[in-house]
Length: 249
Image 1 (cartoon, one colour):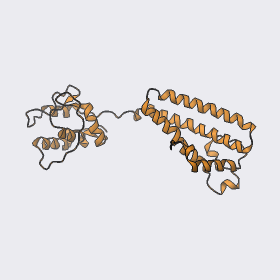
Image 2 (image 1 turned 180 degrees about the horizontal axis):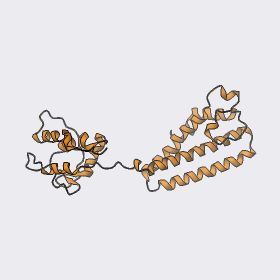
Image 3 (image 1 turned 45 degrees about the vertical axis):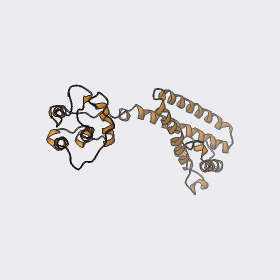
Image 4 (image 1 turned 90 degrees about the horizontal axis):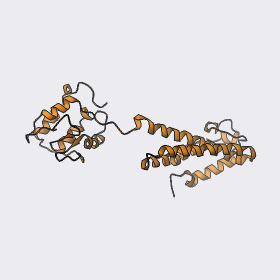
């Protein structure tokens, strides 16, 4: 049983059936905002639960399913959304047509189904806009300024090698230990608005190790006695003169 489907929630279903059967509205309504407005005494005595049922159902069923589809088939998501919207539009037309030929209880059900599908279309279009928006795409990569790369290439460490091999070749070959790589990439002056975990994850796209493998699985390790190289790196990163403009913000 899919707990995300509102129709499997017994309490919600009972409320829905009760409210639709006792709702005194005698006309076909077409918008969620019309619930609870200009109703007879019965509805004015308590808050109309139908808008909440619709909104929760749309989020837990329609949006949830669209997100699930997007996570496993990004190429097919737009065809899926188009098909869903076409189906909802067809259903709205059906409910409107049948509203002319039913009693008031069925009229309330027709209104509910019409509004449900109207909200369904709104939610799908909103989700479509979100995944089309550049702001919702994969986060941009951390950008390393030329002066930072130059320092990494020219600063010789205790093993006789610089932090990176060649500042002009991407991904950059990191020649020091992973701890220093973590300290570097997660420093606030380097990562900017990116979170620490996201910055550490991006290291595998920015750097390779001395063997040519992505520099991954970076993590913080605490040591009482820091190496000369680590101290040198921290001092450089903490100096605001090395960062004349805000990085990655």
